[in-house]
Amino acid sequence: MILTKHTHATIEIDDAHGHLLVDPGTYTPNAPELLARTSAVLLTHGHPDHADVEAIGAALAADPDLRVWGPRDAVAGWLEAYPGRVMAAEPGQVVVAGGIDVEVFPAAHASIHPDISLPEHLAFMIGGRVFHPGDSYAVPAVEVDMLLVGVSGPWAVLADAVEQVRAVEPRRAVMIHDTMLSDAGLAATERWLSSGMLSPVDFERLAVGESTEV
Image 1 (cartoon, one colour):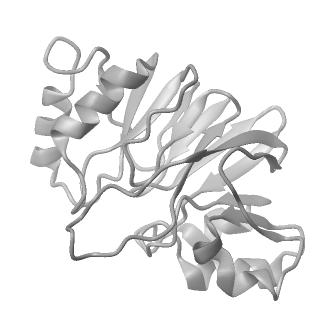
Image 2 (cartoon, one colour):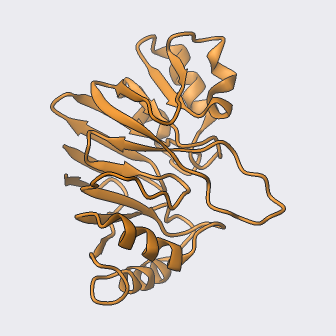
């Protein structure tokens, strides 16, 4: 399985069984290109930095083979127009997205502020190896090979990221949701999250477009 990190929280997965895309949002300038080369999209939630509504809508209109899964409120605008192609995912489901098995987990969006309401939110275990928690610090009750961990944003808390990794105990941890940090901030966060400091494993920082084998 090959994981490619794109801007912010957008992740592309390729393996022998197929291909899928997670959270193509408005911070991802090549989202239309990524959508054009996949047959499956997973959305953790409907915030614009995770779901580019215009680009996803255009892709659904252009490609009759494209399938989209996400929380009901994130996909509600497409359910009637694309029955059987856009699905409201539920925790506990196992779906086959782009040929890849995906387990759906409950995952509450991390708090931004008590005055700010939060959308429905899910997390995904992809191919039994990669756990994408979206904007959450969810801890799945399963073994995780690679944990993707958000490190910037109005909800991001370094201490919570550390505790998530300690609880999950993944073999690898990769930084995502990183657009709101400068290069200096990313380097500092990487140091704090490195093995021997606070985390039991080294956090990996992939450049935009960089791939790694899982």
